[in-house]
Length: 260
Length: 322
Ligand SMILES: Nc1ncnc2c1ncn2[C@@H]1O[C@H](COP(=O)(O)OP(=O)(O)O)[C@@H](O)[C@H]1O
Ligand SMILES: [Mg+2]
Image (tube, rainbow over all chains, first blue to last red; front, top):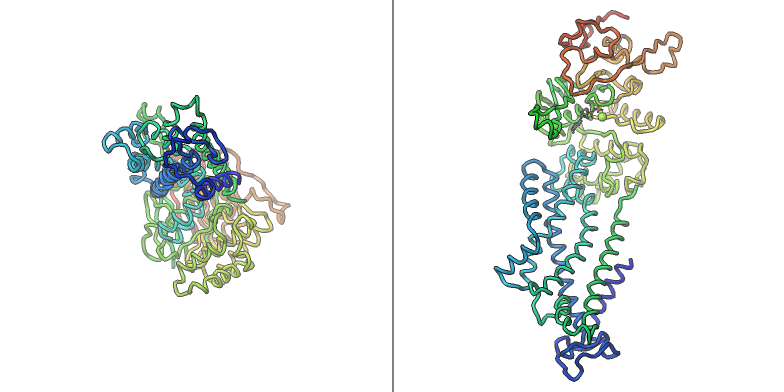
């Protein structure tokens, strides 16, 4: 509940920025550089006089887009893989699980470095890296749940009734296995926001001058003493998203528990 | 005529080997849940299968509906070998646990609607609901149950819904795996009556599994007694209860507290432990607990036919009254 409210506040902030604080996030204005938070510049300004509130809100678009796409895209893939592996078992299961083991064993940051090394750092290469890796967790969770649910009598009944495999998986197994995956996805969003920020911080992800949060923090580091607000507000934004999605995850876990 | 024939079916479950077993190069042990069972289900009859927990009744039920495939032997339905659940749904199953036999995330109506959609393609989308309510009515459920989720129903009500779901494809064979074991005594009676009605009004052949001799006595035409994966006796109900041939059957019957024959009750309840199902006993598998056991019982026992059409797996048994 509170988590949803926090996300709503953020989205409202992004949408209403032109009304609330009509500053161009890219416009340089050396006359008003490095100003502390005030009524005109809510979060202050940076060393080039850019409005930090406008930049943080513009950055939210990057970070949330990356995090949501890099979580929910791979989630779909992972859920599909987990269902198929758990339902059919046997060779199909062994084959799919061998792939997940291999990808799992590969250190994520080494993979990103390799991709960036080959393709160069960019936002689209971040997508590639996350899509290669992020489905694993979902595949494992859903496979495990499918193994449990697949043994239950209502699945056996569905098989005796000769429903198609697609119907058995989609209508009977999936709704009873997807909850833990959804709950996990919320913490995955948190981790992914942080990973996106961290990778951009190290120059491996989104490139300047985009106001991505990790980049905002890098740019602010040199001014930490004179202008701490330059670092604090992007940092708070990351924390805000983290807390919000964690709370949403908890709420989901509570409401999606089957009754009876 | 037989609608379903199980011909010498066996089913083993391999047990995962421990590290020690692998090092010692022991062969993978297998649990023999069903061994060499032959049964013929006659048209319209109710065949009871009785035996203690773990004797392989549920495995046999799953073999009969095609949820599991036999390691040896075969199951034939309507003269054709089964290689999985019948494509036209004419062999249906009702399960023991009413709490896990319905999908907790679909309403009763939705679960019946999808069966109607699958088996009554002529019923239009609009009339599906009416058809589902008709199914509910046939098992004595009110129409508004369709709007509920399984958790809002009692065990007996859920079992009725499971039966309604199994009836939609108009099965010729209904396998009921301990459908009343999880229910209260009063509810048990209602569900048993429902099965009786299905048999009488629709002529569905029923394989009714139970560990309760009284339920079996009430419902069945013929009874197969299972012990450790084997059929040890098969007789018509009246004969079986009148003159049980196998000492194990006698033990099961004597274990039932009989209020009507209090005077000459001879309660020799079964004693002793069931041997573990991994053991590969050569002779009679019951001999360890049998009051009549002697040295000759360690020979291989066969299921032999006796006068009157029954069969027993005990060399000592005679069809004479005891
Ligand atoms: N899927 C399975 N995997 C391994 N062992 C099983 C499986 N199903 C049943 N068994 C074993 O087979 C034996 C017979 O089980 P079951 O058919 O359920 O007996 P019953 O229904 O008479 O209680 C038991 O020892 C049980 O542990
Ligand atoms: Mg059982």
